[in-house]
Length: 243
Image (cartoon, rainbow, N blue to C red; front, side):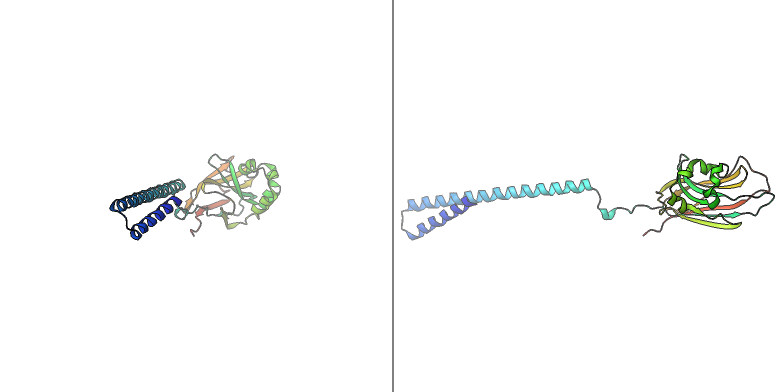
């Protein structure tokens, strides 16, 4: 920049000399040639500076575009993360008929490999002491390690044993820390002695409502045709409301 200013000053001085003095045509010609050369050099310097400016701006634009490509879509275009909804269970406990059922009950979720993911509900007597006997709800007691379970979790899932008649329970899977995915829902009821009945079915905890189809399994077998103590088990999954 200093060089260009010096040359502009020289050009001004030379033009003043041309106007203020009477000189020969040769001298005037030499001055004009000198001014022309300076003009050309200044013009060339301006063009070079412009070329460097274009290269720098172009390089910045390429770098910015590359960063955007690596970042992917803008955050505002991303779909909100899915959260699980509620699991609703309804059933009917039949009155005693020939035997005195305990109605000890447990509900839980398993993963695809049959491992316990989370206990949802345990009846009071089963949670307090009866789990130690080993014959009430054995499929749950074998996995729950209830004696070592955290007390706050025990308190959260333990509830009164349902009375004879219709009952309904609802579980907010999101509040229980259940991630979206596929699980096996299990509901086991102790009948008497070593006899238990288990209802289980696959639930997909996602964004679609589902009526969970359950199968009924007795262990070691059914105590008798007239000893049906649990009926009308209905399990439904309701997705969380989309906000």
